[in-house]
Every structure is written in C-alpha cells, then in structure tokens.
Length: 348
Image (cartoon, rainbow, N blue to C red; front, side):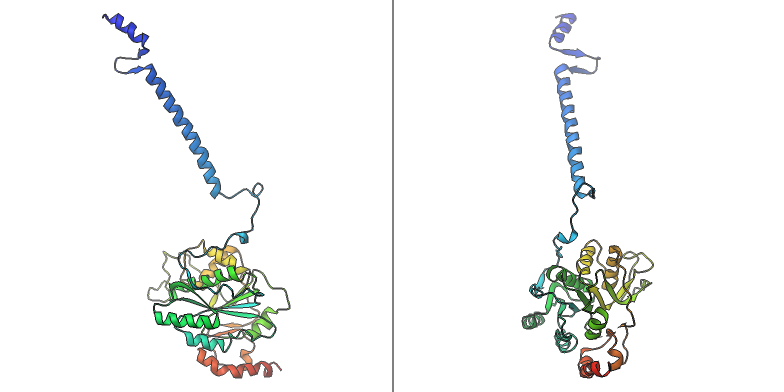
C-alpha cells in the first residue's frame, strides 16, 4: 500500500498527525477532555463542601443566625476523670444561700470531722441555708478509700474524682467543684472555696458582707486580693514557674486560694472558660486568668476581712473578720466555744 493510501485510510479512521513524534487519535483526545471536565467538576464540588465545613467552625453572623444562650449548652464534663463519689442530690431541695467548697485529702478524715464540729456546721447561721462539700481526689490506699466511702455514706458531704490527690492537682480539684456546682447547684447564691487549715467566721460573712436580705450579687468575686504577683523562676521553689509555661512578667489579679468568695452565677462561667485554657498548677492564679478572660473585675473587700497569715487569736477581733490562715483543726476545736460566746459579748 502506498503512503498516500495509508494517509487516506488513517483519515477515514479519525487519525490525525500533529508532528512526527506525537501522534494522538481523536477518540483519545475526546476521552482526555472528558476526564479534565470531570476533574473540574470534582474541584468545584470540593470547594463548595469545604466552604460549608468552614462555616461550621466560623463565628456566625449575629444578624443572620439566632443567638443561643451559652448556659443552654450542656456543661462539659472532664473527659479524663470520672466521679467516684458525686452526691448529685445534694441540692435537690431549695438551693442554699452559701455553698462551702473545702479541698481535703482522702486521709484527712479527722480534720473533716473537726470542721463538721466547728465552722462547717451547716446550721450555724440562723435563717440561712449553708451547704458544705469536701473536695477529694483519689487515694492509692484501698483502706483509706474504704474509710472515705463509709464517711460519705454517713454524711453525704464528699465529692471525689479519679485523679491522684496531690498539691499539683489542686486546680483539678477546684474545677471539679465548679463543674459540680454548675450541674447540680446552679441557683446557689454564693460559693466560698476555703481551705481546711483556716479559721472561718460564717456569721460575719453572711450577715455583714453578703446580707441575705439584699438581692444576690452577679459577677461577684472577692477575697484576699493579690495584684502584681511575679512568677517565681527559681527551680528549687514549690511555686516555680518556667518561662515555657508562663512567659508574662506578672500574673493577673487573683484572690489567694486560702479562701475566696464568688456569686453562684460565676461557677459555670469560670468552668467553661477553663476548658479553653491549658492546665495551670496554681489554682488561685488559674482562676484569676479565667476571670480576666471573662472580663470580671475582682471586688476589693470593705476591710481587712481575709487574712493570709496566722495571727494570734483575739475573740473580739475574730468576730469582725472572715478568714485567718494557718489554723489547725485541733486549734479550732479548742477556741471554738470561746469564739461562739464572743459573738454576743463582743457585739455589745
């Protein structure tokens, strides 16, 4: 067959030459265009879906999307630590006016017993409902845990989560208390987080500071206010804070963790804010960070009502303050009868 005949035959079959080295058939070219078209459609579809997915995580336009109250969202539980003791029915009746959150170690059953006989008695202030809760982590001793279970069954004033009970986990312990209040006691008027090694005067707090006859405050937070605190960079210190964990030169304002008071509505706000922050070892500073992010200013007390160091017991002085640090519970038992009698004599 001559070359001219071959060329005519190929033209009949749709073959076309562009040059000597690249030969493309018409059917193949058509198929290639079809594949490119499909790829183009797929890209358009991906962009459309990707745009929709981004909308899920972007901030909605307030003018187009109905606003939802954050309090309507379920309270986020800590996914890492489950409750060992929860006491979910503690606030089933009318919410208390004041809820005491008292951090305690599992092995400190005697201290809890002493507090139940002094300032943690729930019926101390006439006409005002006070509720106490001891906050515990987990003990590695099965014997101690059995004692805690029995104590809880007797008094129903312990909540406990499955994290190791140690100083480094005090922030977890406080967050456990805030989460519990947010879920089970959201209508409490005030919450007092107070350490177990404190002198505490509930009469002065309720009657002089909070005044139950007045409307409960909102966004209220007070205690022994600390401002301008500098992170400790000494590695040997108990309060060592490396630059890698906190790079700022000064901590935000906070209240000493020995004892601070806040309105019940702040429990959920602080707890939700805490979910978006990295865990911090010093719980009082951590709460200060949460308050700063929320935009809540700490209220300064009207007097020297929260004392951060130990001072000598003076009944007529102690009648007019809220807390004093560094009082063992055996000391409390010894001075308590004299102090309660001073409530009448020193006020006259």
